[in-house]
Image (cartoon, rainbow, N blue to C red; front, side):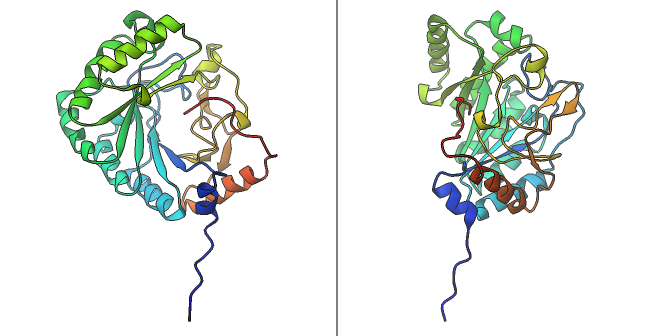
Length: 281
């Protein structure tokens, strides 16, 4: 007697392009620097709310089972979590991973710990906004530029995939040309450089920076945090030390199928053509 294959609505929606394939996790909210436009108002004094490595692995395993195709890890500064190199390697056993980092913590010791990631499908996405140290550091943190331009080639030399993320309100052509020349010199090709707008949420809202974005402007990539599941990685923002819940999908995070089905329901309820409009990755 044949057994019918159970219906897999999430896998089907991802395969058909009706639902993004990446699941994000906010590993933590605390950070060693304090960027002017930070979505989560992260900084050295932020309370250390974090996902446990066990929760992150469970999310990765269940995302694969449900039919998702990729994982993303963000913060805060992800590498403030001592377990992160090992956790990223374990997540990559399930699905390809991109992990966001400000690139300022890569001491010789940390570089040794992340070396095994060269053998895994893991990309480290490092922020670099301007080709000039003073302008870059004004928006991010003192000495940020120097640390990033030292870390990137050190990672590349070890065989680790590095992406450069440039987050700006605007950038002139000649400045962009110099920035692209810089990341190429550091060993990062054009295909691994993304430019995205500042979104006016979190600290960027306080500083009156960036573009105002509504739900339909933002990618609906299921995002798991210690506080619940959100519409996307631009959802669990913090303003005046309070978590924004306008893009909260469910307070339940595990089993992952619960928020995944809830997000799919929201997507299927949108009018035709009501897709993400901003170039945000």
